[in-house]
Image (cartoon, rainbow, N blue to C red):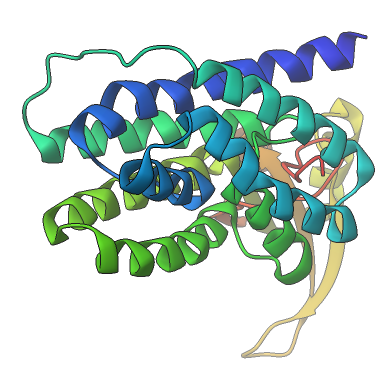
Length: 279
């Protein structure tokens, strides 16, 4: 029950942000959107025979069925729940914001939507749309969430160019790029993890200090110097960004001449510091 309530909170929070960007900016400004929300908006703007929320539900049905083949049942069930939540939020009336600059509005909507998508994908499901396709692409080909979103959106934009004014489509592209960038950054943890490689003649003492503190997991690699061919022992670890200063201090205390290389680790799969998707 705790997991269900926590995941529902993520789905609701993310859906509120995504629905807000649609009802407060995209619809009032006549923009389109990304993924299946964008496809639904194309249908809505052209025909307006059905409520937008109902169109979104219909468009998601075939994509939802595809997900059965490639994604786990838990993701499917939570996604069904997420689609219901998001569709219900799309029933609220349009919201008026004091925005007059279309470019600023597109960037603002992209930021809100990207944050919402990232929050939703931290749950066990999604709110439907391109998130399902992005999950499938991530599962099959290892594409980032932002890259999967851009692939889907490219198809939607080609259709939009044939049906809508160029200015609307260009502003929609601004919205899509900002949304994809924000969602990818937040989903992959804003690079909160760092890969640390330590080369030191006192590696065994440094390793003992790390193990005694029981703060980080370390892998011992064996290497060879490229110039003299001397055998080297390399300590390899992935740590949270906040732990880097204390790790460096521990190493420098034992060996001020140690070589330390620190790199970003945007996508990590692991029990302690991993940010692997739940689906």
